[in-house]
Length: 359
Length: 115
Image (cartoon, rainbow over the protein chains, first blue to last red):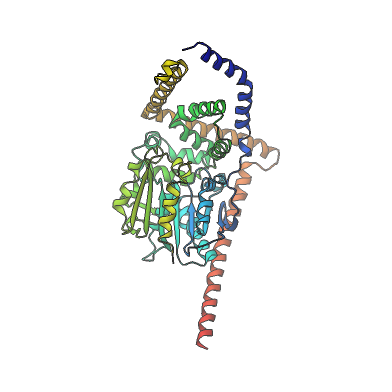
């Protein structure tokens, strides 16, 4: 091997360093300018911090509207990340009438918002407004992460024998039992004064939630991501829009309403109360056995936030006859928002919904 | 050059592979570390202390504003809570109105179809 090759490479790298450094810095510093959630939408209903949006389809083919519900942490724009890489855009192109619940940015005055309020008021009313706006009798619910758990709780809520107006239930990377994960090691112990912290903070700051999420994989989140971006810039393979839209979404962290946060920690990391049918919202029981809708559950093999084993008990609890499970490689968010999702997962979801949304 | 044609890695590629191996090992070690209950306890204590310090700072600033006869954070939160309560009531009234309007419309339709 000639010694000239590595030497030429080194010289080239040194010469290009200022240009690459400028590009890298520019990529990081202009992340806030990235376009996130660009699909046109209209406000259908608002209540406190919650907003219901509608994305109209120009070629609507299915009678049953679809309501998207995201987690109480991070923003629901992940459903509509950027033009060309948006699940919302894909679904409206496929002919679905898509609605989205946005939980907003809860502040200290929203510390009294608990899972009771989110499920029995906000979600209940968002469903009601979706049906009113679309003129349909039933809808499809698609929840992601905590949003999926809220959807499952909504369907499992005691309604005195009445059935919720939900025909299809799509649950993406849904935690049901979090006792086996890293979070449980952090907050599952009774030593952690969850009541005290939520009382002091009111609503738990988004930055604290984000820090905890990132600390689960500290080297990957605080070093590898930036190192890979640098290599991408150096090799000319960095995808500006893809990086910036995701980085902007990751950095946008609304606070977690205090009451909901302490309820969530108890039921997910301490009691596994959903599994045992012990959850009560507004003095009404939540029993997952009441779920008899058509159900599609999607799990991710490399999900460290809602690991697959924490979702699997769900199948033993529900009464649905039409149950399908997509288990795919990928992470908690990348599974649905990653570049590969458009080719494989989204068509699978759209097809599953299409077959069950005719009338 | 012959080495590369034979599929052997260049020194740069070897260094990079070694680095990535080290980084991957470090990442796994840190993941194991943060997964330990002791780390969880440290994190929990930090969260409790941060929350307490934040509250103390807010309360101190609020006290200052109050003594200056200005609205502090606590006053704004209280006002926002009142607004929320009003909005809750308004939402429920609106829902009742919509329900009644739907009922009237249904009855009108039924009366229309009978006549």
